[in-house]
Length: 410
Image (cartoon, rainbow, N blue to C red; front, side, top):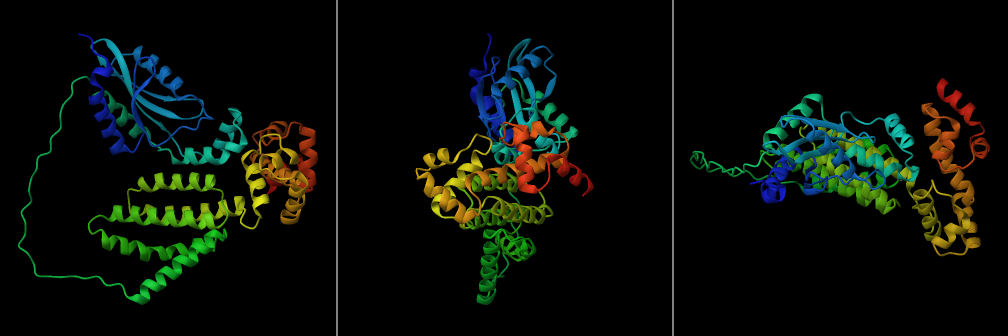
């Protein structure tokens, strides 16, 4: 009798859950026609990239053309990788187990810029896309082969129930000993005062906060005392608490909730991937640095409600054609009032501010030297390369060509 994946849905639901729990990678069980039957995922692929089911159809076609002891490492046009093995009943292909998306190397600034340009992705998606890629697991060639081997061994129709052997350790005789760890009031007050100061620096985007994070080692030690025998759990808990505090600090600092969500989500994932005590300090410094940089770039704390709404709109739709009238209509305010308030608070009119942000983005691409000036003009929201050059010179006192030469000498 021929079986289908649906017949063994519960079996493969368990397999997917086990792989996801142990590897922290996304796992999907896919039918022959590319439909996801079961999934355990932590990384939602941004809609701006592509339809993920297209990848599954390509993967299934390749697996079906090969023998049952073969796995595939597939990388799509967005550098998203998947490892998959076929599910077979005899010579009949019944679907696949797919792990991914994942990466083979840590994405650099250049590779991310190249990916966005080659796939014509909107510059307004730059921040969430970078956050998504940085949250993905990175595997070596050895890990790839091990995962492929594991999938082949698990992709069968023979459910086996796992049971634990309960082996009770010998209980040592009780020792009449009581250890009580008492934190003095002075120490608690000092710790919370330091924490308050650190969060205040982050809310202002002040990178002096980076020099203060080493004091967090004292807080970490307290967490470790509260989780005896579980040092990694203690490290993760301290970082999760710190990530929450940074969320509050950046909210106080005027960062838009969308930016806060992306960066906080990114570090929640990275924290759960910490596997050694050595990793926690570098991740702590990385968190503080990035939260501060986000405040410096995107904070609207000093602006009135009207200007804040306008700036948020501009930042999210920078790659779109923007006008004062459109922005005013969207945020439901009189264009004349918006123009006056915007000039008062930013020392630029709306169009000058839009040009300023687009030029700042253009500097990044120009300094890489991988794209033509015309390509960059369109990437940052200009429809005319000559107009882009005139605006660039007005903002920087240099033409794009002169800026490229200066960047090479620096």
